[in-house]
Image (cartoon, rainbow, N blue to C red; front, side, top):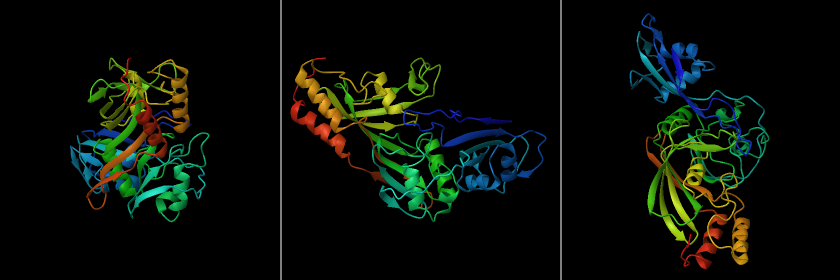
Length: 355
């Protein structure tokens, strides 16, 4: 019997028009007791829809196929009562994606992968209403001689993503082996991801953890929602610590233990500290502070300086798929968020919040 353990198989869109389907999936197969011995690549490709034999072989080569808890090669012969677990990228979406000569900030590149510091406002991959101007369009031009980027896949090499208006570090695979190897790290939550955000309010503690299930909103399917009782949604954990207190806002570092859609944004809304200028999750109005006209003007000026939610993917760590070495990439806080921090620091950091 084949069971699929990946979430959100439906193709829904977020506010940027991007599809929210996961980038990789997890299958579990319990082999029948009467099964004859058969190569596992042939067995799995016959069991899973759209899983070609070459894709299964690439997953096995990356150590993403486990039999009875142990990684096996594609030549392994399936036996009766075997328990098989598989992590694979989703099947390609074959639509015409035009390579575009769009500037992107490449911070590292080798034969296996490329690391980009994405600017705010750039959609990661094409979707409804965003078939040009995306990071993938730019990568298809930059990597036009790389076979993985000439398949017609709408998400070539992607193992994770960040929202259109979130800036920061993202890694993209350049080979099938790297794609599978990196996908397993993200699926197993061994990739280390830290973000920096400006949130409304003065956090009561210096550090903490938000643990609350996240799923599609029951009324607005474009918005994620916290299910505090844990009966619905998916397990989600965000660790945070205060970097700097700035009066009525706080600069925080967030470390993701899980990687749910809009996780940081919806978690901080849940604890009543929404991200500054987040128009989807309630951060684009005055949450804390005074009622004076000068204060309202100050907030509007900050919104103008940073016309998006103030969230940045600061660092990303993972094991290199070929060398096996630990890789860690950091990026500076972008100019728009720096400006907002400086505004609060110079005018309001010494004020004691009264709310």
